Length: 420
Image (cartoon, rainbow, N blue to C red; front, side, top):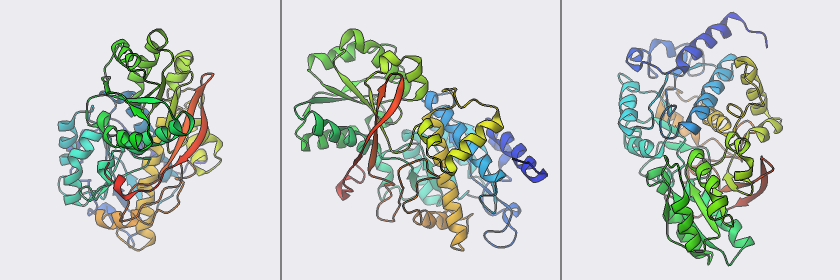
């Protein structure tokens, strides 16, 4: 790709913004009403500022860092390839998975004037900020897929995946169809993220006539899962539904062989990724996984613009497509968050709305219909009455050190599941 002077200046800006940002210095450029956002109507020239709040050093940084890199890379690609008639400025910071730090960053990013959108991260902080973003009319695209974020109480929150509870439901549906006499149990970290799918998941398991054993706690910082596996073994659990990140998943699976090899672990969206599978394929063998979007190789194989974008990003940054530390599904996740930003802004411009207005961008999110996010995911559709982007879970199984797609489970779009 030839790079003209304009693209070089864009690249310099995005790379400068991509590091941990001293946000106090940004007060003059944040928001949608500065001089930099003018130029020929809603679509013509100028910039629009979309901040990011990421976890790159905290309790979920094992999955947070590649997600952040994916979002930043995608925004660079959008700017370099003129996918939007305005340039996206993306100041971003690491909040280290600390809710007070997320609040502080939010306050700094919204000082003076409000950006139309923010890319956020975790469940506790996203839920804590949901009232503020609604009051301030800022579309908040998060990496939390909590069902609480699609209720009327959180009208400005959006995410790009099957919600956590429905991820568990997809596993449970598969278990009921393939092992109807099974006993299941939920294992999770005792925080808002970990607990998010448990109540609704257990209700659905009971609807499916599956036996449900007592809950099991496995902290994000766990270095052993022996006690938890003994609890599962003593309860004759056949399937553990695991809501956590990849690090405790690896601990759980590494102890499973010695303590309870017969149990099948069914991980939700953050529990499995290519680096962990390739690091310990014998531990992950047979583990099951659910997501609504493609893993890294699946994204490359899709042949869509998303695949072209990822290849271009890796070439630009000198990364290897074969290095799982960078080339993993969490990178794809980050790209999808950025595509949601792109779609919101594009749709606002196409409808002659103001792309620097959060209220206008929110309205424009509902123009997303059967959109596969540049070929990276199941098709997403958002409506005013239902901000769940999809009810399709893509089930995977780890086999011979590879995350292999198994089947898609289409869940009913039940109204009583909104928020549960």
